[in-house]
Image (cartoon, rainbow, N blue to C red; front, side, top):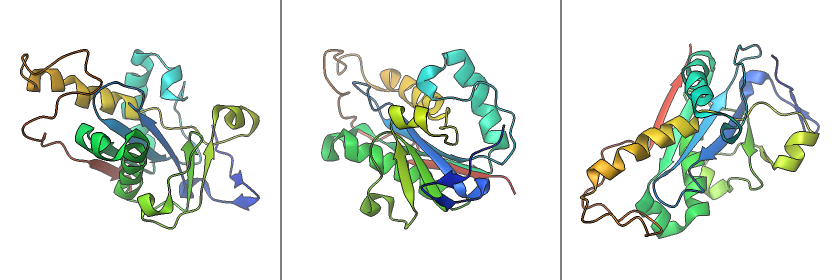
Length: 194
């Protein structure tokens, strides 16, 4: 499967384009996790699609394959206390920015899944970018959106109930109670093949 290389009349090599997506923005509690990924010209990733369109089993199957085959990848996290402080949209931009900045290879172009661009002040990099809402994604070819932020989001959130005392957890709250100490989990992970 090969990537399309034309965006808005400008051309980029496949190894210069990063797809960026988030998982966890719609959750009532937990972190927002974002992934950024540059795929090579040729790759073998059956069922690659938006994570919301895939079963959990397919996401889990694709996760290691994407990490193995990607030219570079990064994962960024915005934690619940950040969401509370700056709002869910800004926290999503923060997680996406961390994912892009964590990549071992800096992309020349970002293809962001969604209807909003990461603001330049949040990205802290001068990289051309465009967004693709579901409508434009169907009408215009684009590189596949990362399918793998969701397993990272699930893994990081699944440890929280055990870390929060039962007396502090109230499932009717809109967000998890602020922990007395922050988890030692990093805000960004990255790798590239070389």
